[in-house]
Length: 379
Image (cartoon, rainbow, N blue to C red; front, side, top):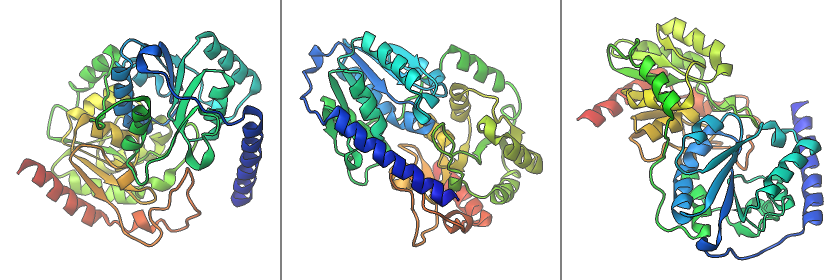
């Protein structure tokens, strides 16, 4: 049934894409010089980890368009993190569902709102054709974005995907296409005053008043558009690994509200502290800065850990660490080389009934390599 549903979904998207291509018509126009651009909207609706990986590109756009007004169009989940960022003059927040399950009336109202702002340029940080089509519909004169498999047909400036590039470098290509120079720097997270106060409270409580702390994020893979629990190292493996780590570290389990039940089981089984669903993203970033290490899957907390500069241990299987691994932080990637991994491509996972790429990473091996990794950071 799931396979039939997926086939129907792809067929529907193909028909809708073809119709949009005919209605909107492919268009092209060179960008004006940076000084001629006065108002810009940057479109990045979801995926916390992707947002964090886009921050070097956001910083480059801010530097390039120093005198322009930059607005971020984003979803509810990202808004708190984006609202305190130094890149944007304004953050326009709308429910993610406006694009996940489109409703014509809501899209028309958002289109009208963007049109009223008289933006000169839209920079789209999504691959899907729906975003290219929507921005073209707003009549913003210049729209720059990726053209994966022809999905950027309505952009005026189509940016090819760099082959086999890390997601940070891929996003930076958008800034380069606007005229930015240099290379992407570190990930940038700037918690606001509320997040700082929240973190200050937690830092006076256990476990931060005792032994070194390892932050553990056994979940991840869920955003408003997709559920990708297939990226998770098995729960029972985390339980055994944490039991081994407990001898030398205090453990803090973190994650989103949807992971509360599984994380509570883990915390109770190993005697860890559980802050699942109890911290903002900004506060979690600040707590990570005080940790001895991070352990988790390919997930938003992993990218926050990379931004915080904490030694990061990450489990990878279906996704490729060369494309999505921890960026510019001491890191240990644990993966298993098998013939079908990595298998994630263009937003899709193939069917899998074994997950050997993750299941075959034994907890004992993970513990040994983790300790060796941490020793190398202090030696």
